[in-house]
Length: 288
Image (cartoon, rainbow, N blue to C red; front, top):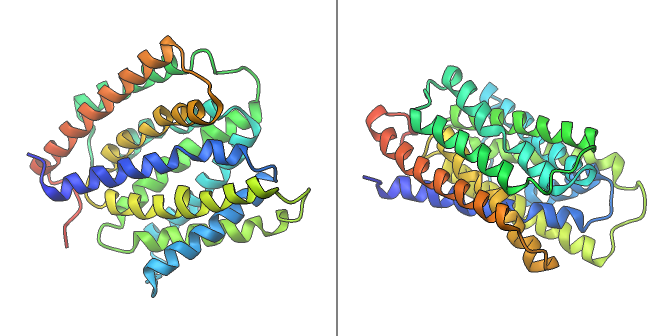
């Protein structure tokens, strides 16, 4: 049975994925250097997180530091990839992360993947191929490599967030955003400043797509396994085309609908099974 604590974790990560899914369209609307976009977004997000923490507990433990560094890398790589290649390429390549979590989490967290995890990962990969088969444009080598790299850093970020257990994972998010904001400083003056739409998009990226989303992810990752969280977060590339449809009128084709259905069913089924198994195996954070 799924208890309230587990249900809250699943809902928090799902809401986080919803907010993350708006990243592609907002990033595309900002005509600015990628690291300037990432830096400005993180400056706002850091202010949001600091307002929640009030008195951050910076321990400088290795899990706290590594989570911050890997998350900073994820943010910078993904923004740069989205500006350098298609949004579809950036999303699908970043969401190879569950594959890395399944393998790396086995050794680093002791969370051995179950059969249904492997089945869900295979189904999700197949669904993504169907979903984006008409959109995976060739070329864009640099952007594609950065997107693939963000998949690795995102997986490592999730693992080190979970290794903090009852420590200070939200402080890792604060540190990561401060780091990205500082790295972005030299790039703020490169090229023309964003127009009004661009500034609104940056504000939305910082407040909602990053700030609020990270608070939700931090809440959720403490209640479910790292792999379960990553599987639920695969909803992001499923939801992204919905925003494209709403704001540009672009309609998904038949294969996109089929692929999206495969992803949705596999992610939902595996998440429910993995949360149920976590009670029996003890692979979940303490509720302290």
